[in-house]
Length: 244
Image (cartoon, rainbow, N blue to C red; front, side, top):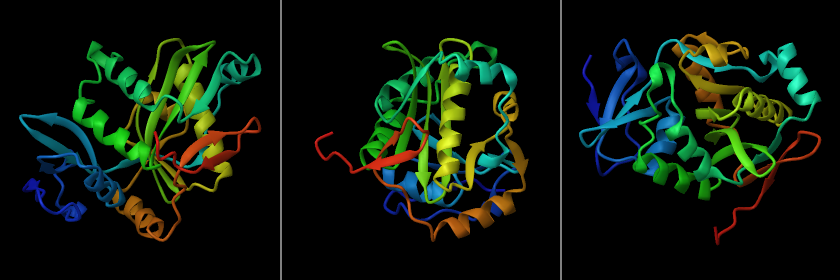
């Protein structure tokens, strides 16, 4: 299959997902403009890394997702919440979370080096527009875990997470999923399989089924703004702070 080069002057054009290679690679672009990002996620694509001046876009099959009702909370994690080991916030340290994800070792000891300066700049711009969101996990005033992603309609597109102490990222993810379930979200897009997310209930679905969700999602209202989570775990949305 050919790998398409997305046009520099049109952020709305994307190839059909059936044109993807077996590993999900479908296109490259010279930029990571926030309008291109919005259109890409709505069309099932996400950027994975930057190399030699190009950003690489993927739409894998199967697509790993989590339905909020399928969330699995194991006994060890229940004790984490019962003992109030962490404090949780939403959208209070978005760029810090991204930088921490970039600096966190992954399988094999490599860092999340796909999160380059261009990635940070583009997702921070989406955060300022009220579309990208973060969950922060704290011990006292120390940021020990978190995750970030993009919200469109009733789908949350997860990007990356990190933990500096055991169970911090899992606790943040569980907190987010519970809030999204109460808000009526259908799916959390986990993109690809990881043992971490699989243990929490994520599973693979056929790419065609994922695109059926995307088609329906195009008619849903996006919770645009700065997110907060109430003490009861309810997702609340504040107006965008134009001075941010």
